Length: 444
Ligand SMILES: [Zn+2]
Image (cartoon, rainbow, N blue to C red; front, side):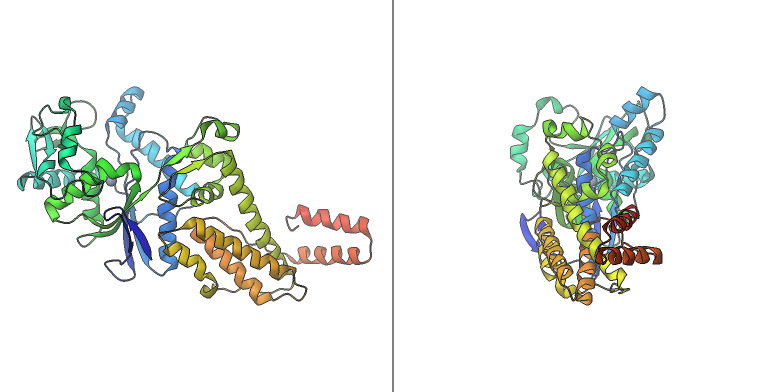
């Protein structure tokens, strides 16, 4: 499989460090509010990648964190006069519901900053010990200019960053581009550290969590939204280089941003664009399908048309499958229990090509076309129908879209036979009766 590595700016052959295993970490949300629909994109992209790895036979360890210490959480807690923990738990639960509604597979673990504090403090101290960080009046900063290859991921030079840095950012820092590892505070949730009371900066937690959650020196894939590339991921790399002399992950993946066409969206969704509300209106399948219609690195526009298109496409796929289920059930033909991978090679080639889901979707439609053709033949090739059914189900499962098989009861089969009999006798009134009964049962 080939994947684009943001670090090298090239598409590379993906070779996991351990054969048959993939270690993957994706930066999670800061839990001070509900997730915006844009936050659903990395959830979907990396869950699909994980599902595809599993299809290829890898066992995947996928970890994503919760940032439960942040100024925004503290502000919200003070506004509502509740604890930071209460705010964080509320929005962690809400985020988990969004993940569930998007039909994502469970994560291996979801570390939180508040549960990792001792390790974070020890890590910052270790950076001070190797002279890559310094304390200044209770704050601790990272020495960016001293960092090996700083700017490699985001393609920037330290000198250029210096030119762009704001002078008023300077107070207490040796250099305006140094970033905060520890922040002195007397407001809100705080911890005792060797530098006094305070709380950690955002960039340290992921490095520490990766080290804690995964064995070995480097993980295979570190992912996140394009907006995290700089400064967050660049700073993660700088800290890892400073202590471990490697960039913490072999491959860096970044998904493109989601653009909402506000005006065109307003008709169906209004102005509210929390993921939970979009999901309540459209359901997880449509949201997933819509997001997979563009390549993960490209920006994606969603508007009324993309929503309608996703709805139409999914119902076309479901209609073909339903017809096939009906055909096979009526002759009591068992759907094969395993997928014939030979008929999925074009789909795999698309997915192997840096997760090219738009091309993979074309293969889904090609399969639907094959299935529809087989269904039109009088002497049906039941094995071929069964194989295409499983192939389509497999692809949909990789996309995380739920497909429910149609199962017929004996009564369903009896009614279906009676309907056909009435039609052949040209008793159209009776045929209509059976037809509406079958429709009510969700079979026609
Ligand atoms: Zn992170």
